[in-house]
Amino acid sequence: MLWDNIDLLIAGLATGATYALVATGFTLLWQTSATVNFAQGDFVTLPAFAIIGLHAAGLPLPLALLGGLVIALIVLGAMFKLLLVDPMLSHGLLPLGIAAIALGVALQEGTKAVFGAEAFPFPSVAGGFDLGPLFVNWQDVLVLGAALIAVAALQMFLARTRTGRCMQATAQNPTVALILGIPVKRMVMLTFLLNASLVTLAAVLISPAILVKFDNGGSIGLSAFCAAIIGGFNQVRGAIAGGLLLGVLENFAATYGPDQYRAAVPMLLLIGFVLFRPQGLLGRATERAV
Amino acid sequence: MTILNGCSFDVARAAITTVIGPNGAGKSTTFKAIFGLLPLRAGCVMLDGQDVTGLTPLQLIARGLCYIPQGRNIFPELSVRENIELGGVALGRAAAMRARVDEALDRFPVLRQKAHAQASTLSGGQQKLLEISRGLIGRPRLMLIDEPSIGLSPLLVQEVFATLQDLREDGMSVLMVEQNARSALEMSDRAIVLEGGRTRLVGTARDILADPRVARLFLGAEIELDDTR
Image (cartoon, rainbow over all chains, first blue to last red):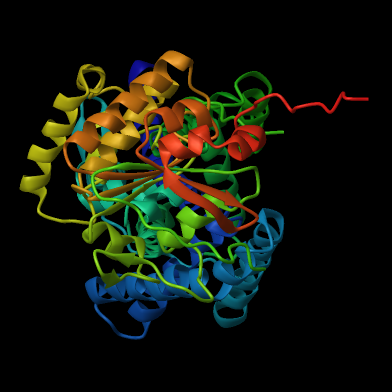
């Protein structure tokens, strides 16, 4: 019983860690450029298709992974910012959010048009090891390890390096950042590139478990969105905590409750938080002049 | 829209110059224009005989300018020390900056005490001191400070003003906008009266303070009623 629960916990943390990656990117975009990226889930699908596409075209896996990252950096990082966010941002948050929804639909339909509606397998690590009565998959270890290392590295980068601090400063108060001579525009672009890298890593980690399908983005995006709100929305640490919590709860709920309600967990959690702790796990209430 | 037209003045070295004027006179706009945040259609900004018109904030900081806008200008979730460090980000050389950060913290013991606390935990007055010390990291020759007293208790206003006077003793020039005109003029060397985007009066702070027209307009003197009837 205990070991079953530990097994569930590990699997839940692994799922949660990938949510945390996506939610972190989501939060970063919100902080530095007031972009609520409703296409974030579909951002995970694109590099997954890019990687299996390049791999199928004959590139060895490491090169295909690298190619997927480069495509994500160009399309989901630079082009997303320059061609969609920059022109739409001046029209307000809502038009930008709606444009992001449209982009999500375009990504879904675009990948469907090229790859069809079937689910493709994604390369993963085989085998595992015995831990007491448990059999632990190397793949789960890889997912959990890579996601946690990435999140920890990101935290270190933001907190300890000069560029990271400048990015935080840009997120917290762009006007003052500009006055101090911080290259605000470069910092914002860097955030978009960072987000593209995070969703690519999430794609590599989550795709073996859920397969690659054009409409995966909906549920991933929803989970990440909920994780970000649960965590506090304006806090990277909150997004990580929210992602892990959500992943674990989803797994436990799916085991001990009816499986078809698994997808309801994020929504229930979201409603609970909005009602009782709207500032989220680690967020702080922000003041607004009225 | 043209906001400033006919706005022209000099700022004396190692002195405090205060700009006063009614709301909408263009005081804050003047500062933003000097600091390269608003485009100038005509006219120029000279610093030590060099034309610095239209330079970016980064270039202006490198030339010894620093700008502290109105209101709260901190990074609330970074620590006090990190906030101050960001004042030197434009200048590079991390090692040299560390010494300057310590120097800034030594100048303000309140900040030293709270160096590792989140900046949002500082009181309003402490936040203003934080902004000033962050500005000092670049060793500015001229500090533009907009309404430093806004939202502060009278006691804290005195502390901020005293700090500016100390900095003047160290040879820094200050150009300040202040609503709190009387107490600002009392500690200033020179004064500029701005109205409708134009410089109306320029002189020593003492003269401006004594000018009856200024007193009537901005310093809250009683309007003389014509009751000869």
